[in-house]
Length: 92
Image (cartoon, rainbow, N blue to C red; front, side, top):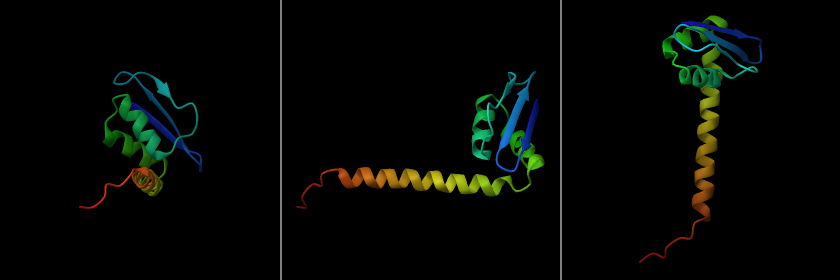
């Protein structure tokens, strides 16, 4: 499988080619997390993806970790907000 990832200082441009995955390229720069998701959907192995990210930018995982934490915080905030709007049953 041929995975090519380039880092432009802001995001990652990604392409993959056959035989192991259909030809595809990102329409715009992606975050590392988006790149992992898109390539995984296309059948790329996670080790191949992380190796390609590391070749493009050895510090890619810092951005990925930050994005994962941000997404978790957003999901938790949305959950807590929704829970606070639900009527509470009286104790007893």
